[in-house]
Length: 201
Picture 1 (tube, rainbow, N blue to C red):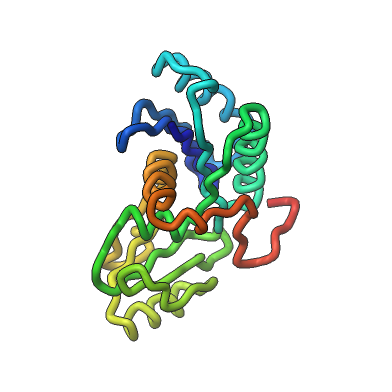
Picture 2: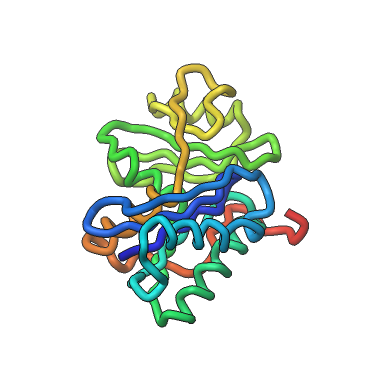
């Protein structure tokens, strides 16, 4: 049984995943302050599922890129649970989670708002990463055009013909369950930053 955790963006969410399905899910779209609601969401999940932390066998976490503070809070929360229960941590990047969620066979890009007037982005052909970086809107659109790619983003209102992409703890847990069977060496407990972190973010 996997506990999925997503704190890399404004959405803070937890999900219990087992037997290829979500057992229960809880979220709070709070923007900032993930640490203030994580234990509340955990209590809600335990109450709704009738299960306890003793039933969890793995902890899955989105490790970035995204909010520096959100990523650190989520990884600290995951580490605490893992130490308490002697559990393995299945850490995945947001790009790896999006790649699994979309499962597209054509060339496509995913872009996440950095809140700094640019975007964390990656372009893929099937499951192969073609390019990854931090780009302005203009540069991102140029790359999309040159690759003839579709675009998926958490801010589709900023792009014409872009498709909404919203990652949740359910996506984290589902991807972790998949990669655990296919490529178990993909996981890491380290935060994934595309720019140096700053403590005030």
